[in-house]
Every structure is written in structure tokens, then in C-alpha cells.
Length: 211
Ligand code: URA
Image (cartoon, rainbow, N blue to C red; front, top):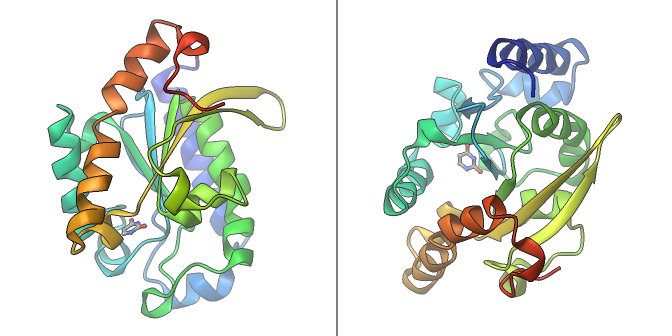
């Protein structure tokens, strides 16, 4: 794998290209800034949310508001801090009034998300909410598929990346809904087991993984 310095430069170039290519220029105009991603580039785990909200738009960092606090709380339950994983969103500008990202906005940003993944090379991609899950599995029904890890091969321009995708409910949706909140926590705390299985390279034999 590339050196950390190289990967930092490559990510900076991807960020730059979003601006230079004027991706979703209407969103860019109404947002304060681009929210690209944050965290450990050596992490085996990448979390992908939907789009920045108000706090993210102000700070330039993903998941720093109420949903972010809940995400950090869940990370704590599995012994991780946010700076030990990488966190990003499919859409990198805040949609006006926090509306849902539009299909064309997700489509426009997807190549850049793929490039981010190509640089970081995670083994586990955790999608938060249906918008980011549907970038990988267009027909996914999150209510049926949450918490069920799936092996996927992502085909990039030059290479293929085998990952496990874990679709989860969005922390903002689960925050104030008692039963969804508990379901999200139950799904989330599987992460260490999935990582252990991946590292032992026993995936093929792992019954928990739906292929
Ligand atoms: N919700 C998201 O999907 N992403 C963020 O960065 C913050 C809240």
C-alpha cells in the first residue's frame, strides 16, 4: 500500500477535483464548505453517511452534531475512538434545509467516494442510512437488510477491491426512536467480530455473512 503521505496527497487531489470539476455547483453555492472526510487513513473501517448537516457544514468535519455524538458513543462500545476510523458521506455538501440528498447528487459524488475508498482500501465499509447503502446496493431495503454483512467486490478504474459492506440504520433516525436505537447498537457491536473474521481470513466459512 501507498505511504501515508502519498495517500494524504491523493485524498487532497480528490477533494481538489470535486471543487475543480464543480460537482453539484448549486449545492456548493448554498453550502459553507465541502465536507470531505476525516479520520485514520490506515483504518480497516470506513463509515459512510448521507450528507453534511449544519454542524458539519460549519466545521468541515463529518458527523460532529447529535448523530455524530451517537456514532462516537457506539464506537466507544467497541473500544474505538473516531480518530481510529475514517468517516465520510456520499454527498459532500450540505443540502439546503437538510433535505435528503437527490439521486443525481449521489450519482455525481459516487466516483469521488469510490476514489476515496480506492486510496484508503478499507476491509469493512459501514453505510449509515439508506442513501449511502443504495450507492452499493441500489435496491436495498434497509429495514430488511440492516446488520447483515455482505461481501462485495468494488470495481474501480484500475483495480478491484473486496470489501464487506455492513448496512446500518442512520444514527440520526435512530437517535430518538428507542427500538431502532437498540437495533442500531446491536448491529453496530458486531463490527469487532466481522473485523476479526476478516483478519483471520475465514470469511468464506463465516455463516454470519450473507453473500
Ligand atoms: N448525517 C450524515 O449523514 N452525515 C453527517 O456528516 C452528519 C449527519
